[in-house]
Structures are given as C-alpha cells and as structure tokens.
Image (cartoon, rainbow, N blue to C red; front, side, top):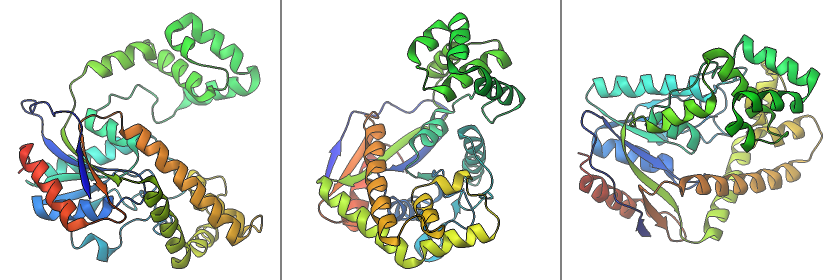
Length: 328
C-alpha cells in the first residue's frame, strides 16, 4: 500500500462543520474504510450512492450488510421505493438532513460513496435551481421537445442564454430542457445561477480519503471478483423479485449496472454468462469514470492499494492524515 497526497487543504472556514469523505472507484473498499473511520472518530455513515437508496436492491448495489456495518449507524440506504426516480436535489436534501442530525448529536458524519455529483453537491451545499426535482414546466418542455425537436428549443435558448447554448449540441436534449426550465421558473439563466453557486462558500469543510489501486489491473480483477460474488449471492433472483413486486421494466432502478443486464436474463434476451461479462465491462468503465471525476479534486488524500487492500495499514494512514488535518 502506498499513499499519495494531492494539494494542501485550506484552513477550516469559521463556523463550517467538518465531515469525513471516503471516496474511490467501485470495489475499492470504501464501505469497510468508512465503518473503520466512523468507529475511530465517533461517527455515523451517510451513504452517497445513487442506487443504494432503493429498498430491495442490496446485492446489485453492494449495500453493506448488518454484519459489515459492525454496529455503526448507516443512513440513506434503502430509503426509497424502487419505482421512484430521485434527482440530485432530492437526494442532497435528504442526505443533508441526516448530516445535520448526526452533528446535532455530537457525532462525526462520514460520507461514503462513489456518486461524485451527489457528494460534491452535499459538500458544496449546491443551491439547486427551481425545478430541480421536476415539475409542470419540465413536462411542458419535454412535450415541446417531442413535438418540435431539439433544434427549436436550442435556438430558443440562444436568445435567452447564449453562453449556455454555445456549450450544448442537439444531442444534449436534457440539458437544453433544463436550461430553459431554470429560466422560465426563476427569470435567471442557468449560466448566472451556476456562477453564483461557484462563488458560494462550501457548506461543509471536508477531509477526503481516496481509495484505489496502484495498478489498474488489480482494480479490474477486484471488480470482476465482486461481480462473480454478486451473481453467487443471487443477483438474478433479486431482479426477479423486483419484477414480481410490480417494478416497471423501465424504472430508473432497473437501469443500474447489474440490474439492466440481469433483467435481460430474466426476460430470456441474454444468457447468464453474457450478462456477467457485460456487467464486468460496464463496472470497469464506471470505475474509470469515477476516477476521472475524483482526480479533479486536489484535496483528496489517496491511499493506493498494492494488489489487495491492507485495511489495517490503510486505517492508520487515513487516521494520521485526518488528525493532521484537525479532524478529532
């Protein structure tokens, strides 16, 4: 195991509460490290995973079992019906309420997960523009999109927010609709809204622990083993159970990696072997995207595993860093 420090954390902003963030690609050991740090620093874990929020989806999302949590309270796991579609705004509001409750009780929030957008929004305290959770105006614009096409809406956006329109292409349909929605609901362009958000001080003072592997091949192999374990634990049966419970096949939850591929098996559109290979491929691609997102953050203290995780040494490394950062 080796460690890599990136950048120097700025001094704590007066009055800003501190949180610990454990980040990294899928299968890097975030759950176990999060539990260990919560136990060491008197904390509770807040899952920052866009799919672990759904009930009945424990195998495919690698949600921690009761044994794996080791008695540490975990929040934002299994809190939503799989038929629901949660936006970043809705997730952030619910997770922030958990963080505030933990802080009120004198505990340390430990944010653990790989959904980078959600984590950034939580730490920054992103002020989501009106309509971020969907509404009548969005449905109206989506109907217009279907009837008039993206080119008409993009041209409309050029007259409202030329800077935003210049960054978009016709294929960026969701972003075009979102930009128009923000303007029509608030009277403010999304360009101006994003500028104000960037200038707002962060809501939390975060200390980041990043986990990954020094060699890419070691991460790939660990991902492949995790997929094999999920299949052995009953991923296909989990998908079939969700279908029997009436979950629509086009539900957001069934588009997640693992569920989408084994839905095809349940519907006899693919073999188990084909699904396994597809899940492994998609998981490796997802891990690459996660790392790309995380590498933008120079405040992350990286712990790079050699071949396999050494959690004892990793915990000591993380503890030393957090103590030096003033987290106690």
